[in-house]
Image: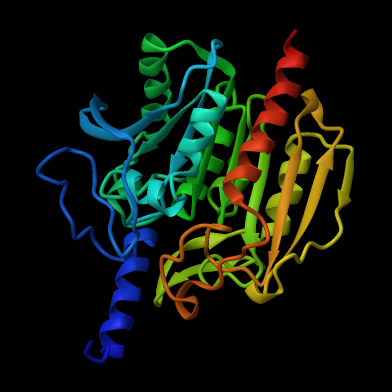
Length: 338
């Protein structure tokens, strides 16, 4: 084999980050075989979900679904939202289809939607089409729920959302603007933005789990400007301010911290979990402080070099942790509703 060109490797890393984080215009059109957006970068694996489309607010919207094996009871529904510049298929690959395995095991419908021009209107004031034209992404997802409810028995107490980066910010927006429908959210590498934070007043308590790295080079743990290769993408509150705000919104009366977890010293990260308990309607607020972690999905694929996005923590499997959190809080909310 010939020698690897280091400049080519660096370029490949940057393009992979562009694909997930949205720091350039989309460069790959939908495949000839289907309408859904393709994955970009060097994420590998098989796409198991099925592509569909529908009209919403005078736009053609595309999304992927994976319907798990029925367990003989109403099914949960989980939105998994890509980062800016990504796609539903890239999110399926980033999480190594682990949400699909949960879907088969637990009886879940997993939805991987595509943002307009690969971005979500998450509440920040950005030049992207989604934000500039005030695309109704919240309404799009609410309509998808009703569409899926016509073909499947849905458990209305188990409708959830998670996502990374732009998808994490969008998860926060769903919690703020669609609390009557969304039971729990789990944003990864995201915080409340300076636009969304002050106006966020959920109609009811929402369970929230935040998974952020303390060394995220893009969405800084202490808050401030979100910068991607020199491009500013709005301003975020600090992770701790975001956590405290959700404790306040959910009227939590107790807070605590677990012991530090460092099971894999080779990954140069550790995890401390902060809890907000005794909250209204029995919900929980949780913060996974990924010490040394970057702008990455814990135990997910390494979509770019660490010098660009930071380290991937192997201390927790974010996919399984998110599902356990959601299941626990769905049960609490259902119990309150009886």
